[in-house]
Structures are given as C-alpha cells and as structure tokens.
Length: 329
Picture 1 (cartoon, rainbow, N blue to C red):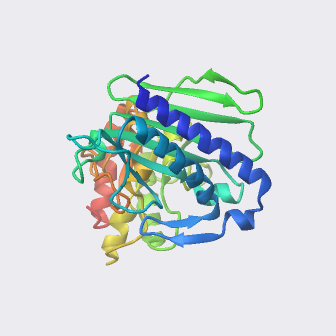
Picture 2 (cartoon, one colour; picture 1 turned 30 degrees about the horizontal axis):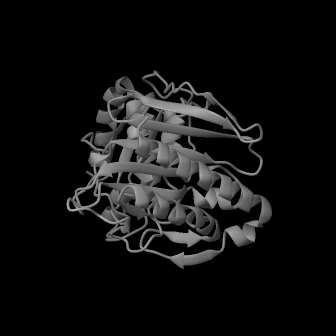
Picture 3 (cartoon, rainbow, N blue to C red; picture 1 turned 90 degrees about the horizontal axis):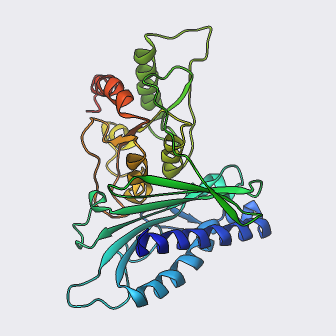
C-alpha cells in the first residue's frame, strides 16, 4: 500500500472516530441543523465535525507533500493548497467527501461514508479518470459496532476490512459482487431521492424493470429498491454483493424538465468508483460510455452501476432503449 493511500485511510479512520463520538454526545436536532449552503450542497452540523478533523490532518500532510484538497463544503471551490509547492507545482490532487450520506446519518437512521481519491495534479484539467487510488470508510450509526473500509489502487484490485469498533480489531473482507445476470429477487434501484422529476424518474424505473422481467408479475415481489441517500454507499452495496443495479439519471431528468442547474450527484460522490471497478463491477455513463468528470464540486454527473460485466452487457441495451423512449438520451 502506498503512502498516499495509507494517509487517506488514516484520515478517514480519524473522521469516523470523531463522528462516532459526536453522535453519542449530540442530539439529532444539533447534528441536522443547517450551517451553511454551498454550491455543492447544504452543510449540516454533522459535516462540521468531520471538517474539524479534515483540515488539521491535511495541514500536517501538506508539510510532507504538497497537494490540492478539493472537498464538499470547502472554500475555495477550486481547491485548497496544502503545503508549499515546488517548481513543478503540487504533487497530486485529493478529492474528498467527508460525509456522503449526511441526511441518513444525522438522524441516526443509516450509516454514511467518507470518500476520497488521489490523482496526479493536472491543474483544473484533472479528472476522475486520472485517479490512481481511492478509499471509502463507513461512518456507522450509534447502534453499530462495526465499520467497513474499502480501498483500491488502479490495476491492483480492490480490498476491504471490517473494523470492530469496540474491540479495536479488524478482519479482511471478501469483496464479492453478485455474478447473476438478471434482476430476479435482487435490489435494483433507480435513484429518486428528492423532490423534482420524481414522476418521470419513476416511469423510467418501471419501464426498465418491466423490460428486464418481461412484464410485471402482479402476485410476486420480484425486484426491490433501496433509496440509500449515499452514492458511495450504493457503490459499496454493489461491491459487497447486496445490490445488482443502481442508476442515477437525475441530471438527464432535470435537463429534460428545463432545469439548468440542480442538486445531483457530483464528482466527489463518485470519486471511489475505482473501488467498484477494481472489484469487478461496471460503472459507466447511462449510455454505456466511459464515466468521467472534472475533479470539482459542482459538475452534475449521471451514472449507472452493474454488479458484473455480464449483467451490464444484458441490461445496457434496455437502459438505453428506455432512456431514449423518454427523451433522456
């Protein structure tokens, strides 16, 4: 494991520890209070606890190696320089989402994730496709005693551990995405979290599932949905074999409704897609092309994730047909 990945995992572990302490001491009303509204998203009380760990850690890291930090809620949006650059400029860019899934975690409903990825610095032209390593760490609810940590280096596979937070121990996780090439008795989700475009998104969802199953078996529940308000969490569910299909086409839906700018998935939400890809999942743009985006906090990104290549090969034509039928491609 390289030093940058080790530092990233250590940073995420510290954020996990601070949030676990904060949640035990604070009420949901305090954690869910809106602190400020940035272009990336609303920053809640629970996010501030993560920032209190993030900034000092990166300041110390920057004394050893200069880099640019890009994170949800951080100013400036173009990135914060950590350390003093040499003649060749910063060594790398670190994109981070300190709490992906704030809404579920701040009400102690469901775990969130710290997401982070490293890419060689190419200035504003740095993109998600440049990422060389990525890591994600589960932020547990107060009812959880364990937390999963997943990481990957490009071309070297994905790995994971499950941490016992009470005992202070960890054991290796087997990352085993589903190898099924259908959606029967599977969790398959078309993201439909928030107000705006729900009707059109639901029609897309219904049409894809009906096409995959050859209709609707009215007497049975054959496909399930899981509206996990965490893109990183959804990727983890694919990697860990719990979901087979996840799609987020909010940018396409909103564009078709004439909305030029809206809150959707951003590059920091998808910065750990390398973990899913190295584990054997397929993560792409909805039309099947390679998924890429600038390493920033404002670009809206539509994406789709399949548990394996065989499922992607079978479902991709159906996804494209339905999206075209509804004027989204």
